[in-house]
Length: 62
Image 1: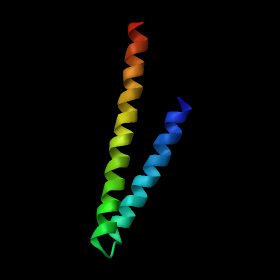
Image 2: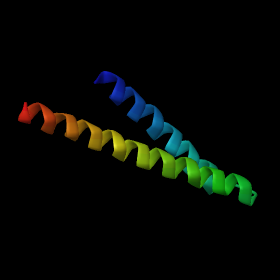
Image 3: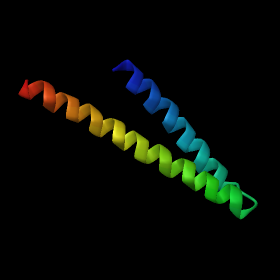
């Protein structure tokens, strides 16, 4: 499970980089790419959280 924490931290940093890219973008391409990175990072972190709690629920049922 420590791997999930490392992935979450890495993706969170990438999402923050995406936000910074979008904030300081000079053209539309970098702006859209930065927003895409931020959206991907956010969705991926929520997916990791859901996966964690699904595993907790499965362990309770077993």
